[in-house]
Amino acid sequence: MQGIKTVIHIAEINYSENLVKTGEKMGVAWFILVHTTGRFSVFKSASAEYIRIEDALIESYKNLTILRPTMIYGSSSDKNIWRPVNFLYKFKFFPVFGTGENLMQPVVAMGPGDAYIKVLINKEKTINKQYDLSGKEPLPYIDLLKTVSRKLNRRTVFIHFPISLCILGAKIYNFLLPKKAIFSVEQVMRMNEDKAFSYEEASKDFGFAPLSFEDGINSEIEEYINSTQ
Image (cartoon, rainbow, N blue to C red; front, top):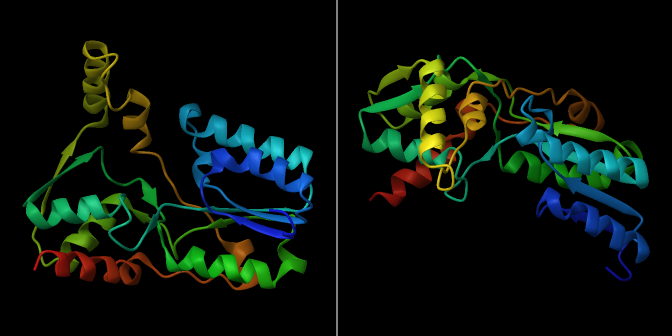
């Protein structure tokens, strides 16, 4: 970073502290840090470390801009939406933990990408600010799944499992396999947590205008269909 005045850090929030500490010594004047809306989770295992990192940075350093995208999707590189796309294409049913009414607001990759550039060219407005970067509007998880199913031309039966039963199953699973369990009870509970965030400040300061999920998912569906042919 010698001779560099501005750094856009998109790699991972856990690198941010070391990067900013080192960059300041090297004379970097402005850090644009791409973090996550995961800091707002009510579950400590998901948010505690994110909160600690951001609060420590904000307290110790100046000239930071923090961007927090929601769940990013848009291509086969996305493991969040690509997996349900693959499942919905191959099977006639889909398991849903709980009602599926929890809100989600995923953002298609081109949205944050465009935001990074606009933050740079609007420095006088964006320096020392924090922005959430989400999709156009929140939608229930079950509606997200139905949108994908419809665009894949599939007729899917959604099988709902009571969240209490899922939590009980997770507890038994973690009790029987305490060292090999690949998910926790808290992770199951988080499946019913709302993940909806306002991008009003980003829209006001640099014109952030994300696509709806209805429109944003089209390129990923097209890529998936092409990969099956």
